[in-house]
Image (tube, rainbow, N blue to C red; front, side):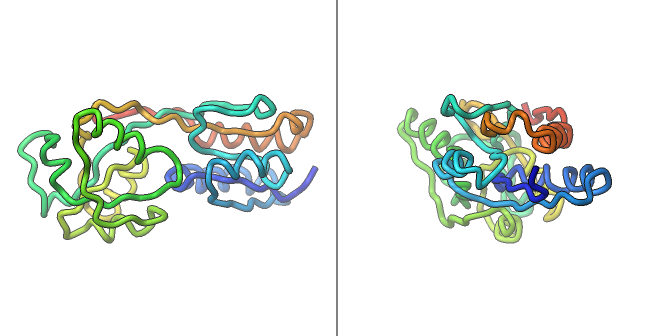
Length: 212
């Protein structure tokens, strides 16, 4: 068994998983090291096939039969905004959602398409003012502006806490997103692989949706 484990984790999940995962494995398995990558969905399957990564965590609506897949959790997409700049009397309306300029975090997966399809079914589009490749700077950009951002709930909660922002529901009928843990069947006999998989699952724990 290799001592270094390679993982591909979507940006919005890494904020939740990695601190807890490292804390869980650092004492019982001090010899294991983790290498984290952020890559596109098509590349994940290829890297799992060639054994260049051990696990992929992200959105997997369809997977090849050679891969194993476990749904870790489902999560709402919510709207993040600065309450000092945007005043909502109650819930955000669809008119407000499409009229306000938006910050898009491009996770290179499917959240943007989910929203675009829901808007298109109502004959609407949104105003994307800025697109960024990861979530790290989203809070700093949104703070003190009239920008809004549609992002997964767990990530929104972290950013809101750090930057005194607020969260509200998106006024659209959109499905929750499913976040999956994926690995190659060839690793089912590997004890260290199975152990790390169990640690990932325990680190995620049970996530509950709020803002219903």
